[in-house]
Amino acid sequence: MAPHGKNINIFLMDGTANGRIKCTLANWTGVAYRIPRIDLDLCKERNDLKQSGIYFLFGVSDETSEQVIYIGQAGTRKNGEGILYRLQEHRKNPDKDYWSEAVVFTTSNNSFGPTKISYLENRFCSMATDAHWYIVKNGNEPTQGNVTEEKESELEEFIEYAKIIMGVLGHKVFEPLVATELITDDSKNDSSSSTSTVFYIKKRGASACAVQTSDGFIVLSGSIISRDPAPSCPDSALNAREKYKEIIDEHMTLLKNVPFKTPSGAACFVLGRPSNGNIEWTTEQGVTFGKFESTRV
Image (tube, rainbow, N blue to C red; front, top):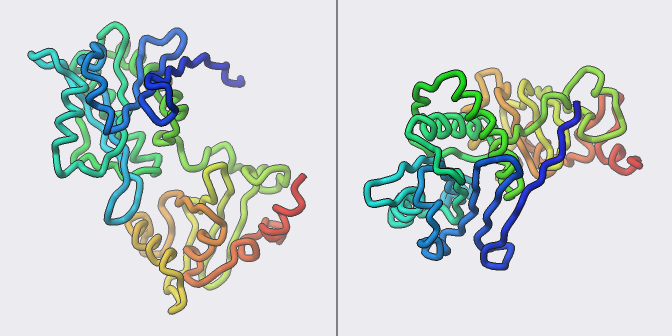
């Protein structure tokens, strides 16, 4: 069954697209805010930001230029301060100077208790880690807590709505790199779309497959990459191998999907040498990626 349409209300609180944004969704008690770090002080009078909730800190690592995220929970405190107070604490913390934007989830009826936000924090951290788009900066995995099966069902529904809102706000933190339904035996021979066509490299000890998505070119889990990079291997490919070394096993097999912006970047990573992705990647029938692209209707 095809997904139903959703009615999302997006309110530009400051009248600009890069300012504060409030999001609500029809038939959902949740409320979401996107708050640039520099605009935290503008939120002091918002009572719903003094409640309990979950927050996400988005930024970029100075050392590696990778996208990073920190996921936390905030309970209502005796002084009446909740989420906003916690964000202000993070702004003062020199160890969290990487973040430039926060996304917050709370409720319109102030219904989040300690058990609920612990469950949500645990699930959101797990989902963000599994999606592999961001480096999750949480030092320890949050505890899930004990919830009844009825409450778990309610919270999982909240999570589904939160995923939609997060995507609307421009963060694919929960989206898998490649939807599993794209990679099927039947799709390998489907030339109608690059998102359902698998491309291959089998040379120089490598045996890799990849797909093109709206987010870039994804080298798929199970691919084998060349063991020894050539002296001429681009720095970008060497850096990628270093970045993903924890998901490359002793046989040079990828344990997870790895994203690249371009087919050439992916080919250099796989082959360990300068490579033209338009030539190196081919369909199962031997059609190069470049030719495949040029003949698409």
